[in-house]
Image 1 (cartoon, rainbow, N blue to C red):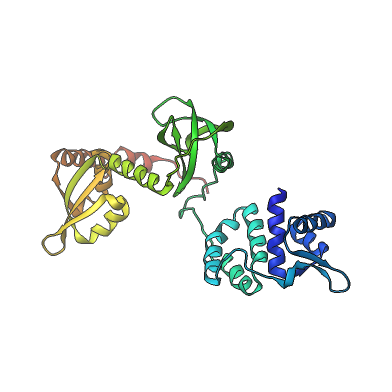
Image 2: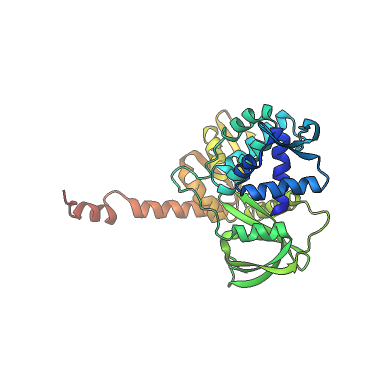
Length: 330
């Protein structure tokens, strides 16, 4: 877009002080004729840009003006490039934009900005798992959000048949490996997991967006509602205190220390969507804990224990089958 390029021309002039049309063409990856037309367009629009002929000449801002058009301080520039630098390592367009931003900064800022942009690498994958790929539909969603147009999506909720929906897209949220689209349907807030979208397409309809929209506030409401659903079942246990950090790792915020009892023992409240989920999470620590309540959880743990003993008794069918299996070829 020419408007974007004219801004880039102006930023380059204020950062460099003086440039030739050939230098500007190389910087912006356009022809020399296009660079010259852009410079002339700025001058015609009243921007104090003028050419200087002869050896060492070029185009510059009137009076050698080199105002920092961005208004950034050195610390602000460093913070900005620390933030956006990791994105540039995986997105070619972000990398190109970052390179242009660095060149547009005052020369005294550039060294620190470049160092900041290269200082952080974000690896979103977990140990032992492949790095999640960026959802294929994400560019369509992003463009609709920015351009404020409605989306038509085909969505497959985990408990329903796929259905078509028309959504006013408001924003995207990434939480761990999952992306979520926040938006409105008939004026009501809705949240859609991007990996459950079978298709998405922009429409020509203008999207409705509340004037006082606060995306972070909406996401807080969404996460609070999800946490309430995930805490439908509750259990109180007495556990060896050394196991409590492991319960925090396993259950996260759904494992809450209530009290320190006798030396080495703690009372902990654990929540999960169902008692079965709690039981299966606690089964691996059975020798270190006792369930205070509910009684139904004690019965479920007893059932799991009996099933484990029955299937894994020494000399059982599985062990005999393993013993009698032929040795692998060498």
